[in-house]
Image (cartoon, rainbow, N blue to C red):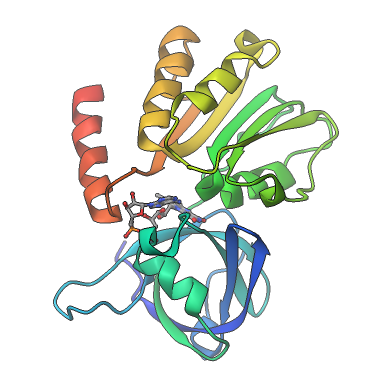
Length: 250
Ligand SMILES: Cc1cc2nc3c(=O)[nH]c(=O)nc-3n(C[C@H](O)[C@H](O)[C@H](O)COP(=O)(O)OP(=O)(O)OC[C@H]3O[C@@H](n4cnc5c(N)ncnc54)[C@H](O)[C@@H]3O)c2cc1C
């Protein structure tokens, strides 16, 4: 099926959710006809760059969707001079600004059932993991491991009582790829998992993939694992690294 043409959306709200998470709500006339129920899916944010020839395209999760718009949560990169064009656009966006947006692309939901589930991610996956936690049945059990920059980046997430959240704090997000793996090794009964869902920095993803796929023997029917970014690379370079990794990992 042909990809839908990007639409021009308008900033209808923008605020800091926590110290290192910035929300932009996009709607306006261009939102008319946007497919319904896309929370957890992704959009392509296309801020204008200095070079008209080279379009900037960055991938972001739809955190919430209402009749009038979508919320997109941008994880800040640390100091302002480390930010990329999408993050810079978001933090300086004002109500009424417009942005080209592609998509939506499909969400990666958890399978039906009560688990036990394991969800692992850093701040870039907090929007997707939040949507997945919110959609679980009350009977669900398991663990979510979430890496944040600051203790105040913890968010209230509606979740079943049997889902435990382990917040890990590291100001230098992605610098310590072992953090998520070490936390995953410590969960109760990792050998009883029915499904694991993982999205984070590339090197951390590779360590978790080795643990879950090879050591715990979770096949593709019981594991979603993806890198959302790679430290030191912009998104286009990260995509190339992902492609090279997929070829050697097959
Ligand atoms: C399916 C999918 C869904 C995603 N959803 C979200 C989401 O909802 N929210 C979100 O924040 N991100 C999300 N991401 C990750 C996001 O696309 C990348 O972080 C992207 O690189 C940010 O673009 P940028 O223009 O700000 O930085 P880029 O120009 O791509 O990168 C500039 C520099 O910043 C580094 N960098 C990139 N991201 C981070 C980070 N988070 N912290 C520290 N340094 C970083 C890069 O390695 C590079 O050195 C998602 C990615 C995928 C594949």
